[in-house]
Image (cartoon, rainbow, N blue to C red; front, side, top):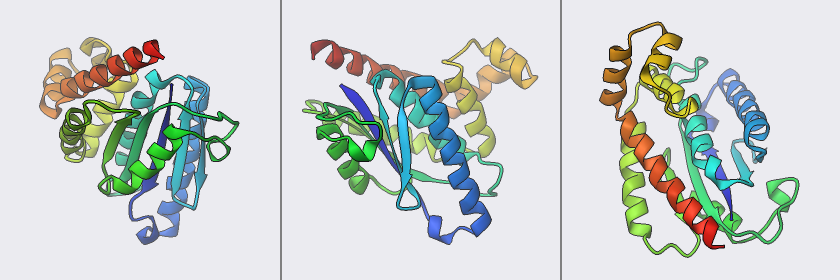
Length: 212
């Protein structure tokens, strides 16, 4: 089992040349980071779409959420940069150096999933899904939470996820505030629900990977 993320930047054709250039530069930076941290390989194609293949699927959801949040809180745009994301877990036939030369059910599912995903939202799919309705419902709640975040809230959630849900005091030390303040802010934005959602998905990933 591997994971494949297919993404599309929302309203890229309506961006100024400077904003669009910064978005692409940021995407390239994200792709380099995913390669360094998770040995994942990604590429940008058709101008504003991208695809990443993760050899270890356990890291895929964390990486996906960090990419979404990083674009959301981008300093180079007064408005959040939205992206549509389709994350699929499943089998592959060929795992090549780049996603465009790889193939298999998981690549097809991720690509088709992007077409079905509501603009600016995330979808998560598994091969031979037996509880698809439950996963879809949980993901809809996640989207509702993520798309209501301010840039400041998105930055805090980014730090919380990136630190693998570090103790609140550690985040407080990084941000120069108190542990209680961080706890209150994380609670207000629903960060603990995001943590629990990730735990549910990754438990399913590990279970299915163990059965393969």
